[in-house]
Length: 248
Image (cartoon, rainbow, N blue to C red; front, side):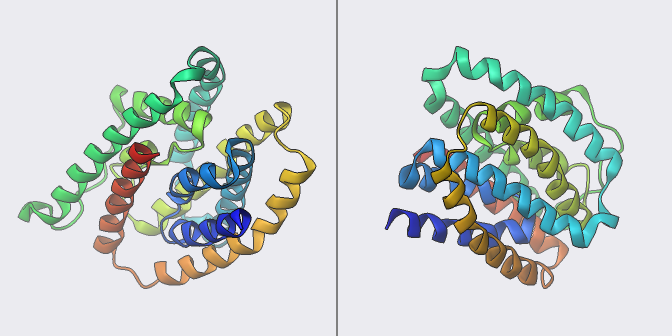
């Protein structure tokens, strides 16, 4: 029964992933941990995120912002490798890290949604920033650390990327491609850690039809969305992600 519920979670969260290019893993992680445990949930959700990234990339590769992609992957990869050492130092503090991240994500989502809906001058998204500042690089590095620990760096990456790319097609294509590179690094770490047992492989294979069904439905819904609605949904999902981290 738990596995059936796990597959249902994968279907529903990948509908969201198909729409936005993010949030699928962070929304799926809390219920998946309760249903199948960390050693199964983490490696499977990580690999499914690679497949979902490839799914979006295949049809939108011309819209990828390659310069921005290279910057994100390089800085977040440093954070992912740092997470290997942090995991050992703070192994008993994972719950606290989830709570702190949840609060930060909630603040970002409320602030962003307020600017889009409550300020007349912000009724349309502002132009993208021309250059990233040191604080933005620090945010990306932290996103890499969180992604390395929990495969949940999406919210922090979103807070950076929404200021850099305003076009929804380019945004979705770029962030989806990020997961292909970064989650492959995590996959190698998971294999080295022995998380890919025969049982995990079987569960992962059974998960694929639910992944692709969710991505297909999400892609259909995404094509019907306006630019402003897309940005609003982005911040709403950030808020939900933050809540999921707090109640985990």
